Length: 108
Image (tube, rainbow, N blue to C red; front, side, top):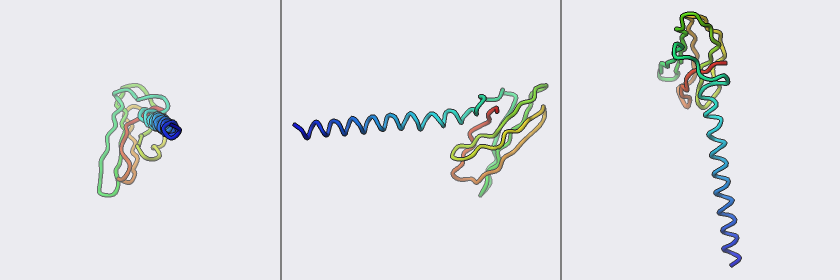
């Protein structure tokens, strides 16, 4: 009887730990997807070109009249710097090909 109670307690603790770690692992990733101030409007475009050793992400402000502060977002590492982009401006940020993934653009 005592053994089964101990096993139940350990199992319950393990399930609770897994559940909590899953929540904390998802929250930062979700926050990083859009940046601190959210996602830029659809007139600000982002794309990536991949080479053998590096990849370069680009952002271009195609909005007709509005200036935005935009940064390039990466999974598994530090994001690009926050830069002011007037209409027609373009920025880029280069990183190693692995393990980084282009995660989009964010306002800052």
